[in-house]
Length: 625
Image 1 (tube, rainbow, N blue to C red):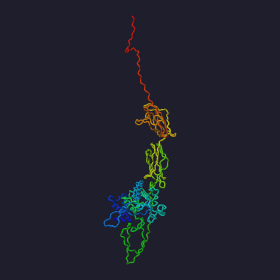
Image 2: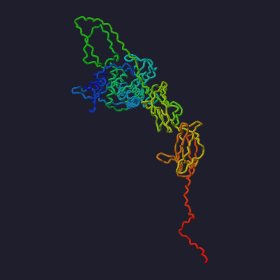
Image 3: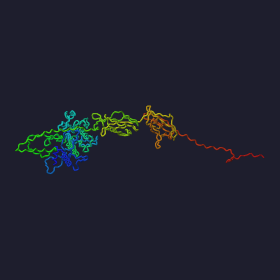
Image 4: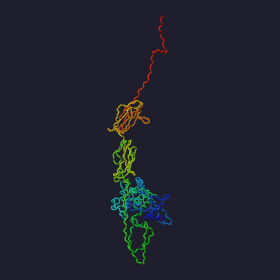
């Protein structure tokens, strides 16, 4: 039974019920751990091939509804007992093989599209399913080292006979036909669709529909158009139907999609299996007769007036899904045949050709280059706004500007510079000229270079700018309170106020960082190890300090801000500013005057009558007798 079913499927019978049986049999033929594809019942979705006859969308298709290969994946279900044994059984490994360059192109396209449109969830197996149905994987991998088909792959002229009627749009540039368009290349794009969706995926500078890399990436972008999420069955069906508006085509592609998802392998280029049955090639052998495949109503044939012959009904069911015709009644040979009345011929109904609407190409997908716009050097002094904003231009492959592209600007590097609103990133959309400029950029207090990077959102295309923050400058520092030295004694603070004005080119210089260093002489380069010092945090000793000039360009040292230290002598406060301004302030530290010691008074003889401790005996003259 499996072989019989396989033969019937390969002869083009792709009605909903048969496709459902094919998918079920394919799932049953796999290893025990394999399970049938899940059914997404959200929104009323059904499993593939369950007879969904929803009318395809009325917008245009990538292929112009060109013919396609109708063979379904092989089955390897074993024969049931009693089934004929002489029928072939296809096991499938050869069909599962995909030529190396073709497989590489599908996987590269998946990676590229996922980097630009991750929400689409494009699987490469879907591209493989379409490539199998459209061209038999580029005619079994008949491509050169660059991925170009060894000979052009062209569909029939789209002249309205069984297909869409599309007049020439490319002057025969792609398809060699200046009257009607034809589907071109391994993914069968018509020229008008390729003009919008064509890609240069292999970087050779050409968008070539006959190159498998270019065509696979273009097909991926086309399937992801209109914000589709191919992980959802409804969007997956819409995407495939946008390629070719046929439910039979949908079922065939999805059958191969599921087949490749269950496993595939790489084969050398040029050795892939070539399909045989094609949707416009029926009528050979026992295949269905050729009819316009997408006519909404069949043409009613005119009745004949000749005597009908006995007809034996065909016991086989119709392979196209149309019930067999009822045989006409036989006549009695003994009676004269009666000519039936002639019925009027019903003119065929001309199908209405729906308007062609190409899917919207996302602006980001059209960008081929993101270039910087020369705006001069990006420089600013600390605390000030940059005079110019980083600006980029989004261009397509022809150099034309692309409008509506989202550009992300990002500040990169060790810096405290910020965009307006204290942000490090900002997203801007290109205008009609394709230009996008970042918000205003404000320098912080940290000097040095940093990078502003612009990137196309959801793409890897980027451009970079180098921005530099420099310190504010002053070419002159002037002391305002004379040139006299500041004096103090050891262990005390300088009690005089010091004011210094910074100017640059004669103008006041606010916000300038002025460095003060206590040195031992005007020629010394290093700070002194002793002597005066600045009062630091937590009482720390510091002989170097940075001051910032105020709005009037002044720095001020109040009394007590500078301490004398314990070392007497002459020192200097050296003040320097970016831009060359400098001045010296002399600092004199004196030892304190010694305090006089109190003197002890010498004792003086007393003239009082007080007795002394050791009175001397005096001799007095003796009286005379």
